[in-house]
Image 1: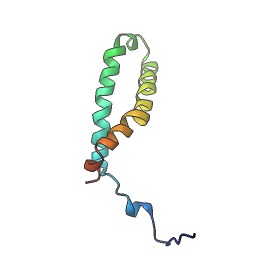
Image 2 (image 1 turned 180 degrees about the vertical axis):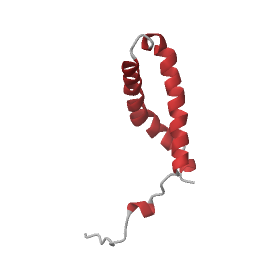
Image 3 (image 1 turned 90 degrees about the vertical axis):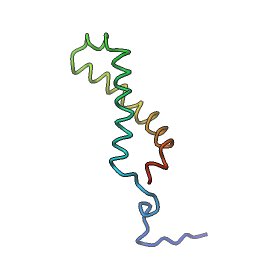
Image 4 (image 1 turned 45 degrees about the vertical axis):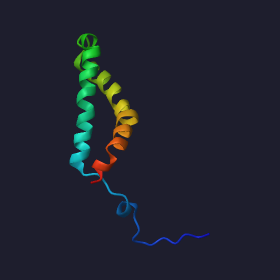
Length: 84
């Protein structure tokens, strides 16, 4: 079986992309409480570290959490709102 593709075909014409302001709001809604929780949990220990080490620890915890856990979960939960 052979599939015929048209030159003007693109997945972007089929799949709706969320508006940037909605994605920014979703990211902020995840990052703010996550940073707050990390600060509350590790704030005493983090305050003993130099600024560069502190930001390294925070970003090392935040980025994987955002990419692998929070964004996939919340993107599914808010899918219908994101594509409106």
